[in-house]
Picture 1 (spheres, rainbow, N blue to C red):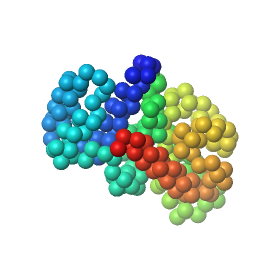
Picture 2: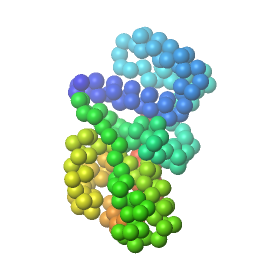
Picture 3: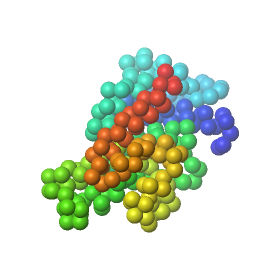
Length: 212
């Protein structure tokens, strides 16, 4: 599980599955796609045959590398309720995507309860149109992160202001949390979402570029 060969195999499998799912490779003739992948895996005597599978996919007219146009659409449309949100967030942990025996949960960076319209109006003095926009943006992909059950439980035990200020540099880098502490203020939530969305975009592009 932790051997170098095993880690590299999981990276290659993770890349293939995420790129295939995010590019919609299985949207048409999925049985043929899986048959091709299975044939190449069975014929391989070494590492996961990513290049050979891609060659078969291209022969069927499939997009095999991650499209930046697809990414832009995903970042615009993916929310907490979207089927692809967990998958997209997993790319921020590429290379260490799985901790054996750990379950991951989607968490709102700025807590959902904090961004409820009534809370913003009654407790923080926001006007209703602004509060409504905040509430509608609460589930945006740039306000979501993957945490283990233990991490999520610890976060819920803390006030948001305390939690966000105690994140380490490594944590912020892993989760693409902006370094600018002014963005952690509630009134700057829209700017936080905008900045983190760009950081996520840059990370995903960099991750997939490695396999081109």
